[in-house]
Image (tube, rainbow over all chains, first blue to last red; front, side):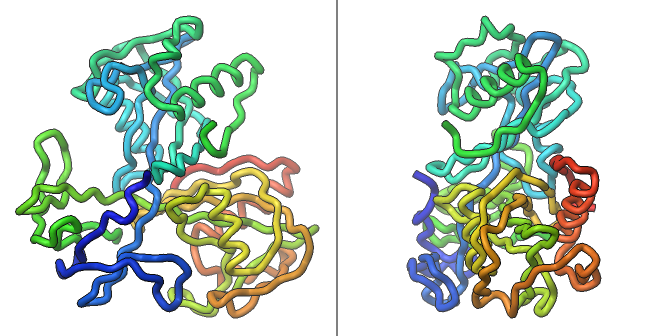
Length: 181
Length: 181
C-alpha cells in the first residue's frame, strides 16, 4: 500500500507524532505531539516517455529492483525544481541515453494503491544513439510484434504501450486519462 | 520557494538529518545521521475543475489565505487513496457544493517554484444548486465578460480559464500542458 502511516516523528522537531483529524480537516494527519506541526502525505508523480524511432519503440531492461531484468519505458520520480517535461527528458537521458523531442502527453494514469500518478509523453527519437545508465542493463528498439509483454515491468508501462499502438493503428493520438487497468 | 530543505529530523527515528548526495544518486537528499533513512521530497498535485453551466463558468471566492476574498476555480491537494478525477470531484463538492460530470483533462500546469503540478478538468454542471463549503465565501456563475480577472487568485486558474474560453471560441477543446505562463 501507499506510504501512509509511516511518519513516526516530526520532521521539524523530532518529537513523536500522532495520527488525528485536525479541527479544520476531515481526515487523519500526522501531527506533532509537541510543536503541533501537521505533516501532510500526498501522491507523487512518475514521469516518462514513449521514445519512437520509425516503427519502433524504445524499452530499457531494468538493472534495479523491483522487476530486475524486466522491460520498461524510461520513467522515474519527478523531482522538485523541474517541470514534468524536464523530468521526462531527464529520465530518458539517464536510463537510455536517448536524445528525444517530446510530443504530447499520452497517458495520465492513477496508481492509487501506490500513491502515485504516472504521466507519459510520446517522444520522437532524434537518432539511434543509446547509452543506458546504471539503472538499465540495456536499451533497445522493438517493433510492436517484438514487445516482450510478459516481461513488461509495470502495468502503467503496459497500458501506455498498448494505448500508443492503438492510437498509431487508428492514425490519431489521443490522451488516456484514468485509473490503471 | 518550494518546501525543500525543511526536513530537520528523521520521520522514522527522530534523529537529526543532513542533506547529502547518496552514493547512487545525483542530488542532495535529507538523510538520517543515525538510521540512514533517506527522505525524498517531490512535487505534489493540485486537482480542480472548470464547472460549466451553459455559457457560464463557476468560480468560488476564497474564505482562506492565501488570497482571501479572491476568486478561484474549485481545486485542492490530491490526497492519498484517490484518483485525480475523484480528487477534482471532491474539491468541487467541498468548495462549491456543485454536482458535476467530469469531461477531459483541460490543463496540466507545472508550478515549479511551488513544487506543484496543477491539473484541471473541464466539467459539466448537472444543475445550478450550490452549497459553498467553509473554504469559500460564496460560489457563483460568471459569463466570460464578467470574470473578475484582476481578482483571480492564482496564475494557474487564470491560465486555465483563458485556455477554456479560447478553446470554446475555437470550437474544440485541446489540452494545454506546460509551465504556467
